[in-house]
Image (cartoon, rainbow, N blue to C red; front, side):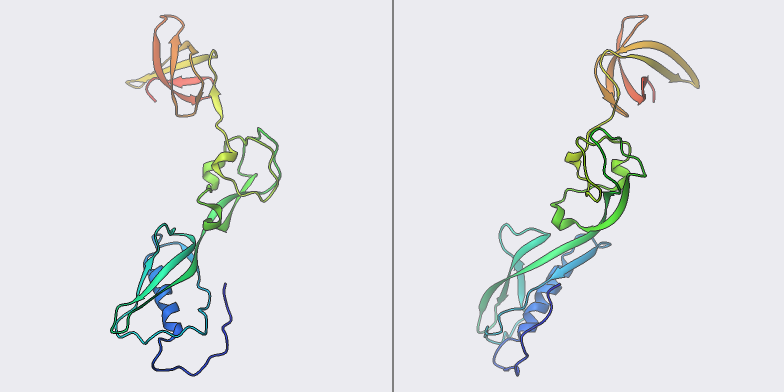
Amino acid sequence: MFCGHPPALAADPAFQPLESISSAIRHYLESNSRRPDAEYRIEIPPLDSRLQLALCSTPLEVFPTQGSRDLGNMSLGVRCSGERPWLIYHRAYVGVIQEVAVLTTAVRAGTVLSALDVVSEPRDIAQLNGQFLSPQQVIGKPVKKGLPAKTVLVPEMLTTLRLVKRGDQVTIRNNSAGLEISMAGIALMDGEKGQRIRVRNVQSGRVIQATVSAEGTVDINP
């Protein structure tokens, strides 16, 4: 957090108090928070103590500069539209603290993550460039490469677990009217859980669409 200010000087009634500019910026950032339940981290560095702006006769207007982001480092404009108008720009930082998936231990490439491998820890997602996952999103997925403990997991580190591979013999289950009928099939494409794939019925030779439900098993009516 930015803290500490230059020694306070006696306020000159002809000039805009610098604290009022910082307060206007903070109020703008807090009012425009898009995650009402999130914990925000707002940092506004002190303004130059030599700055002397005419006392504004109207409320200050704060606005983001073109291309400014919602999180992280940003530039904001502060405008006075009163009798003696002025405009300045100042910087600020906005972070959001959110629970993300973090490795509890080092893992090797191909490791399928379990609940023992990850923990939920608070992180500033503005510093993660929006790349983060919850523990629920990573459990059951393999990692692409070896990773050290305390790594914050991001989508590009993970791959999908193929429960069915092209050419595999699979069990086709047809659940209809309370009855389950099973038959042999051949997978014509790879598939992960919940994915629709093409399967050839060994007995009839027909190619059908089925949903991968488990390793080596697909359902016609999941």
